[in-house]
Length: 146
Figure (tube, rainbow, N blue to C red):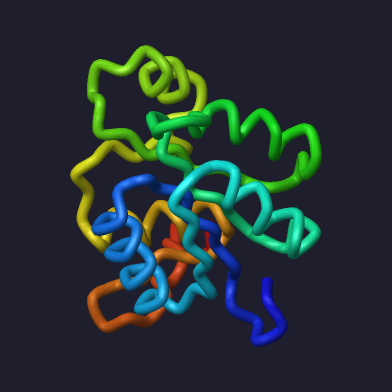
């Protein structure tokens, strides 16, 4: 979390329009968001903050260094950093392999703002929100929470 108590999210995406849109979506969802247009810039941002991000959102296929390669670098230096992979290539072997092991860590393009925010909240441990914007109450079963 940043100093203001908002979860900090890094987005690394080489499509400038999508990068800007995701930055806006995350900011509107209450996240402190930093955007990078290439993997090397994303790695520099994490190093500059000494790993101070709650989540990194990485495009799997990018020009130059891929999101998978960046995730490897981040994992070696900042092993507690959570990663959400995004991909526009439905048939991508990397996306399929990741989805088999951890489906919550892969989000296929195109996705809606709600899908993005729900997935980010899940990964950073924030309860999902209902239509009113309030956190959903836990389900009550047999008079107990859970």
